[in-house]
Amino acid sequence: MSRVLKDSRRLLVITGAGCSTPSGIADYRDEQGEWKRVQPVQHQEFMRTHHWRQRYWARSQVGYPEFMRAAPNKAHQALVQWENSGRLVGVITQNVDRLHQKAGQQRVIDLHGRLDRVICTRCQRTLARASVQDFLDLHNPDNLSGAFTPAPDGDADLARLDFSRFKVPNCADCGGILKPDVVFFGDSVPKTVVAQAYAWVSQADALLVVGSSLMVYSSFRFVRRAHERGIPIVAVNRGKTRADDLLTDKIVDDCETALQTLTALNFSPH
Image (cartoon, rainbow, N blue to C red; front, top):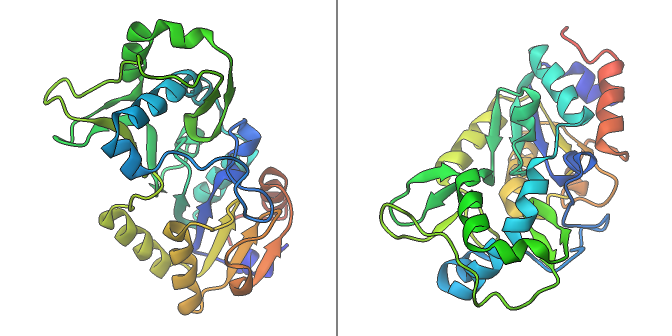
């Protein structure tokens, strides 16, 4: 077990897709940090083109229900134990599945937002994603009959390619474009969220990265800030990470096994 983690009294954790894969949610990248599949929808494409919104919501209609059936796994549960021990500054997660919160984690920054909520891009009204699902199922019943393969972040690969008749939801208040309350690729994390995450880095005496390749800058920046401050960094990841040359230690194992082992080896209050 890493001495850094055993000695830490104010540990900050960053989690990525690898933390949720044992719950049945697919990840985007392989062990070399390369894309496993076609990149997801880009923010500008979604906002600019009705066709891309039709494509997104058609795929989301069938993929979202299965995504929401995912339950916290032993990695999430271990982090809750660590928080209850008083050892954690908090968890910064790249995931949008809210599994940390479902497990009982209290101090969580959803770096990339949350998929269970939808926001109007014009008036900023928010609403539950479940209400949008009701709209989609009511107006697009035929879309539910085709074959599909679940994909990351509530997406799905569909056999059909023509979405021209698909009805997309709009804001009931102002008619604006609705989008999931997540940071799409090509968009930026809100400044207030970034500031809060940097504040947590400044409070930490060690940083643990769990199940992330850190290939996206949105999370890598916090690892780089920790390195600049001389804060030791440990990663739990089976493959390559963008921060490999910044790490104090690396645990090459799956997230559930590694965090259970760390917990069993007296990862408890001093």
